[in-house]
Image 1 (cartoon, rainbow, N blue to C red):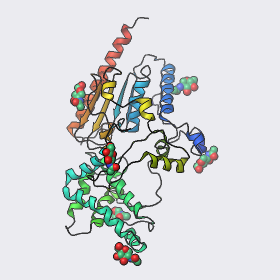
Image 2: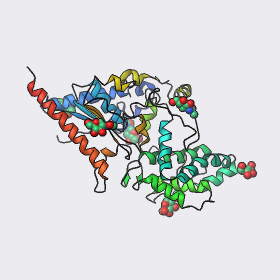
Image 3: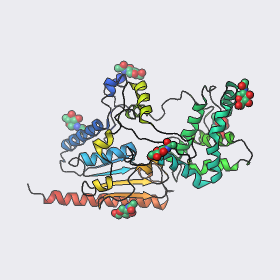
Image 4: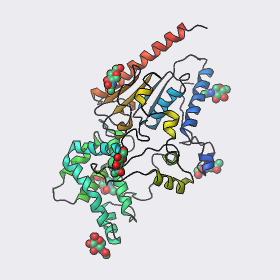
Length: 382
Ligand SMILES: *[C@@H]1O[C@H](CO)[C@@H](O)[C@H](O)[C@H]1NC(C)=O
Ligand SMILES: *[C@@H]1O[C@H](CO)[C@@H](O)[C@H](O)[C@H]1NC(C)=O
Ligand SMILES: *[C@@H]1O[C@H](CO)[C@@H](O)[C@H](O)[C@H]1NC(C)=O
Ligand SMILES: *[C@@H]1O[C@H](CO)[C@@H](O)[C@H](O)[C@H]1NC(C)=O
Ligand SMILES: *[C@@H]1O[C@H](CO)[C@@H](O)[C@H](O)[C@H]1NC(C)=O
Ligand SMILES: *[C@@H]1O[C@H](CO)[C@@H](O)[C@H](O)[C@H]1NC(C)=O
């Protein structure tokens, strides 16, 4: 056996109840982070046994939600994994630990840092769209402007489509061309802003913002029209809807300083929405009860070891991450640039020095853990 691939339960092909897995809360109830961590613990233990390597050092890696799982795994199962690398893991995006507006403030900052005009155009587009889409004639016109495959029914769908483009582009503002969520050029936020800035000043803001958003959906140039409404689930995020309605309650709101229309977050609204969709209500504070997060710098200062939290500050998720060193062996590696788990992407010749250095540091730290671990194992009394 030279390759083992694990999959989180209820994602991809790992459906515990086959086609019925998503049928009801009775089956979906088994989709929890705690159960997923237990799956990994059983898998790793079984693998070590089958390979006859009971003392082999195991380091767990994960990015994004997977990064949260990696860090939590190290804290819950120290006897199974001796280290964890958690890339872009927003484990502090719960309760009131991180200001609720920081995510969209960070997205906005990415655009503002490229050009103030770009930020202002995007900031102004939402009201213009809402006004135009307030009647059927206006919606028809807007649908044409957006090259929608079908005339949209709600102006909110157009706003969501645009919102997704700007937010996901900020998340994936990689320094090299990449095809993570969508195929994009290097530094796609800069490219979007170039598109906006190239319009004559008096041009229509909707045209400008649409052209920028198109980069996200159509950089490959292969889209004949855009599925603005009733799109499918291109990234297999179906299970996340359930998780966001049970334990993954990451409160986010939108401040008036951002480039998005201001809005609040309400636990009650989330609860109602979840009840309507799944017949369940969230456990609002379960994650911090189960895994911690509150006052993490104090709590983990003298508990736990061997975790790397890596982040790139262009990624809006970085704001809910661990950005300062907690102890000698629970460390934060932060780059000023860098987007969502950039360090875990395959190395390319064009990679800038700072990401090469981040990866080098990670390897060096992991080697140190393994040396220490092997020493400890060798020294241990029977
Ligand atoms: C599950 O659904 C897939 C796709 O619709 C289908 O091909 C398959 O036969 C189904 N499996 C069972 C056990 O019903
Ligand atoms: C270990 O071996 C047992 C018995 O062959 C098998 O059932 C199990 O799936 C194996 N575990 C892994 C992780 O491959
Ligand atoms: C639709 O809204 C636009 C913009 O607000 C307005 O100019 C137009 O007269 C409205 N058309 C109808 C049929 O109400
Ligand atoms: C996508 O890009 C191609 C190439 O630039 C263009 O011909 C096409 O019209 C675009 N699709 C949409 C829906 O805008
Ligand atoms: C967003 O949340 C913060 C708490 O983090 C709160 O102080 C602020 O008033 C909220 N803003 C909006 C627009 O709801
Ligand atoms: C954390 O400590 C490491 C050295 O172990 C250092 O390279 C890194 O810059 C520190 N991180 C922060 C965010 O200060």
